[in-house]
Image 1 (cartoon, helix red, strand yellow):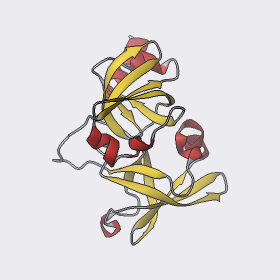
Image 2 (cartoon, rainbow, N blue to C red):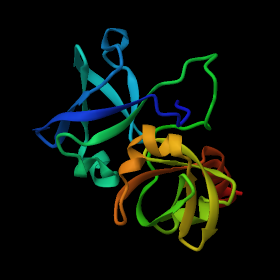
Image 3 (cartoon, one colour):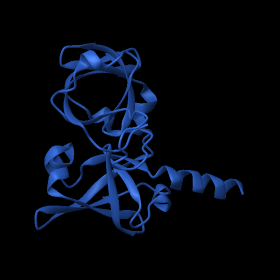
Image 4 (cartoon, rainbow, N blue to C red):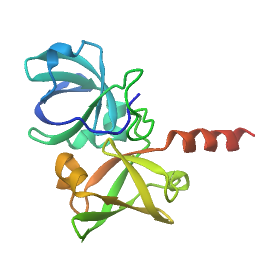
Length: 196
């Protein structure tokens, strides 16, 4: 489990194919001596397992399924990646409860400056849009954000200068593809309604 509070912006060090899977080596400021092989780390909102490591880097392997359902198929060397280590019991829950399971890929439609902040509009794939509500939580590229408004399949978020500056979201442009995870409560409520 994660909180959607990014603790490092790593960079893709290398990309390699292993049969049908893909291996990414990620450069990080994390102390990799404290990361166990098998540890879960959120990468732009995707929970991935550490399979190898060295000083200042670790590696993950990604299945064809994950590549087809997320933005990871777009990753190339040098790309900045929002990283968050798994939450521990007793950690501060600064964002919201995030599973690291991407629900869909959205598209950035507009970015507007408002004072020092940036208002970003994102189109979400249908029928995922039904699970997004104004003032609810959503995870965009692994970052916990509050939804400002929703109109049909488009929602808006406001990125304060800190978030813009210390995450990969500051590199968004119109047309960027972004990993989205809906609020866990919305996911379970939708399932309950389907089966009630």
